Length: 395
Image (tube, rainbow, N blue to C red; front, side):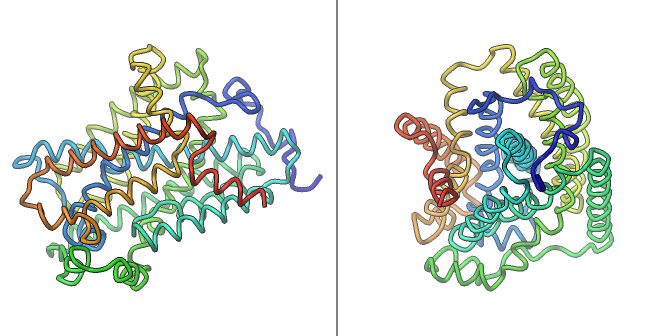
């Protein structure tokens, strides 16, 4: 039947043991999603806490000086770009799982997946307009539409697209870095309008500002589109290789990712960070994804050895099972805490308030997400936004 995945399109390297049974889950994936969601907030929390918020960050991505602010610099170094890359890989894994489900049930692909991707695009658009200018859901939805089509192509085609995507991405990041190094001018950190807007402006005024500057605020997924495609396809490949399965092969793959990802990625990322703001793009979009693979492997190794308390595993899994709801909620909470429409902490403490209040806010929001998701899942099988999505798609 046209559009239905056939056995001929499924490579012989697909490891059946890497897949959950119908209706089942791979426990490691839920924990990884939870870590990725809370880790993404480790970066975003600084954006909310900066006067001028998204616009200030867009003008120059202020970085902490590792010599005068070592605690903040370390906190931000551990997170910046790493957990976002991890989340992107996991989105590719989820796409591969949905493809497998379509194959088992004889559902046309990618036609049967398109409504889900378009609904995610709508959710991301609302999140961008109403809450946060650096939404990732819109970019994921567009990338998913492309990669979903690639899943019914041959392994040779997917491999070619993977290399093309990563090559294009490296070229773009290198050109941007070269331009920054040769420019030498200091970035304009913030405009008086943006600082005033987020400190004392109304919510409708903030919405209007995001719409007015939508092109600039949406440039990250455009510039990093090659990376998104590469990480999606990498997630598909890792899933089919059994990297998330509770098998000997899975444990070996996770160990290799931890060793190589951290062993190569961390020194490279550290060197680029110490190189200054001119190397921001190479650090966040080239070295950080390598570290993300190391994080993935390390978390898997720790879980394999039973080193995490059961309560921690359960809490992270709850956040992972409600990943969409948790992602949106954490940004809503930070906006209410930092902007003038809420408590206005960004203006009250400002950049002179030190890093501790920002890290305390991250800890508080993480605790609320863990407790809230755990209590919610005791009564409901899916998160709030996940339930809305399932209801809408059924209709």
